[in-house]
Image (tube, rainbow, N blue to C red; front, top):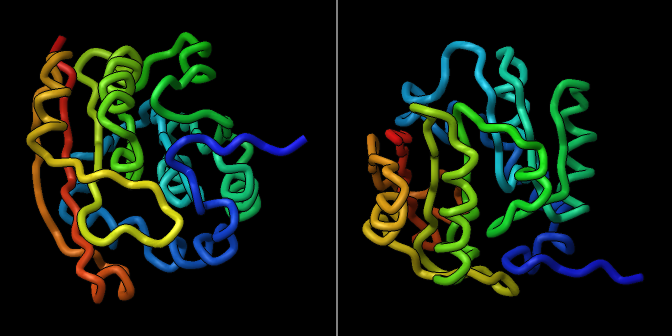
Length: 206
């Protein structure tokens, strides 16, 4: 039986071997240099949505955090589990906008990562997704979201998403922006193509 492709993940299964090497070539510290001071220092419950190669989940896991990593593309998820074979990371086949399996855990999280995922969702999906994510945030928890801007790679599904729209969506759930920075891509190929990013951090003040 053929696997159903989750909306927004088009192209990732076929390109997984290349992407696993490409994404792992950049360290966590390089990728989040300007924002890392806002990330949890004390052991916390972390949810990494669209965990890709597992690099970010592994970084948190190595520092004593309780980590759930959700990745809907089988080839990426299984590759991540081979690269980062920690017995304490909980890997799930789940995705935005609904996060059905994560919601069934009946848990809330202190910090949620949504890196390089949000722009794969269309407008209606983004509205559904922010509702689902907000319900998973504990009191005073933080949400990290990055938005990709620039040319869309062949065979990928992406939408133009602004910081302004994302901030308005988050405000529906009293998620207050603490951090809003733009930066050019640090991946050489993306940088040369003119790709840039917006990185946002919100705090749950409900």
